[in-house]
Image (tube, helix red, strand yellow):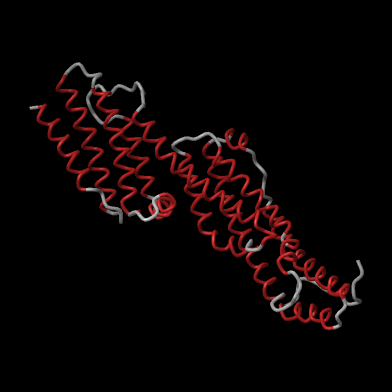
Length: 327
């Protein structure tokens, strides 16, 4: 490719005005070949500025099978890095998109094609990151994995507006659709896992016997899960908006938790039948329901979400009935 004599001195250390002046030179003399060369030089200079930063990330390509073989701690660590790498990649590409838009403002060259070419490495890194997110979303589900999915959904939602600007043109439409598609997949999978967890609780058949009628380990596990959910209140609000358009998202967490509590209560009713002594059966139910109600009420007390009064009233009646049986 031919270049002008000053091309060898053309580097990434140029200001936007210098890039624009350089491009205007080719446009001014109305030479299509020189114009094309000028375009390539700007592209290559910006690519030289972008690629070293992206290579330093060392993004690793992982499949669904790789994800499923990971222990939960290792997966959480990978997702922590994924979150950081995604944010860095988006910021770098957003910076290059801004420079590209400013350099080519009012100039007839195809700035979108130029950006696509200079950002090729960045797009490859982004594809690898999105591929990992897709693998996590499609891997084997577990109650613990819900929280890493919420972490990933949250960061995808955070970068959504920048992604739409970066990949706004037809040359980048595939990347834009892939990113938005991953966000929807994460939301859908997380939403389905609420139902999965509800069914898991109701169908739990653990044989742990609580001989003295105290709180069952299942009750403790479920309440701990619920406590973690409260750490994701803002993320859950965004998630519910994906599926509950036009409805009150403030009440959705309460609805979800009510279903989980009902599933737990149904399971505990079955477990109470293990007791031969009716009094001990009543003590078991009273202890567990009291633990459930008091724990959830404490959580809602420090939450913007409101616990439906009917739920509290329902469990008070159950607790009162159980206590009456003890008398």
